Length: 94
Image (cartoon, rainbow, N blue to C red; front, side):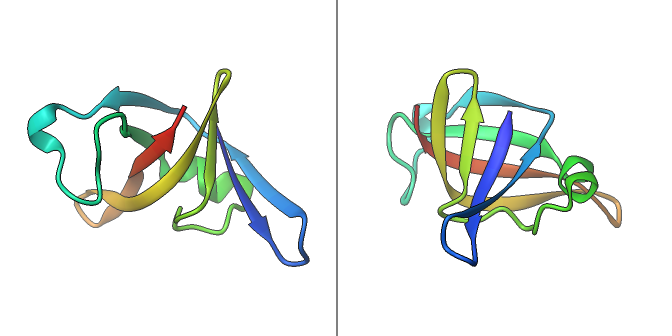
């Protein structure tokens, strides 16, 4: 997967290759702003740091996964004790 963000100056893109997986939301998990068809991505925080990507991931960052493109709706950190180990991204598109 690749996480991309447009930055200043206009047209400049920063990106990070990230390790992660995607999953569909269960119908019971769908609450605004989520809608049917949105997906959940889990990515490693260390990959963002290693790439110098300006974290946290945020709307409207783009995730490229295979031949699909998704837009980040929101992101939540994943913690292990006091350490941020990853991010849960809600994404739309595909």
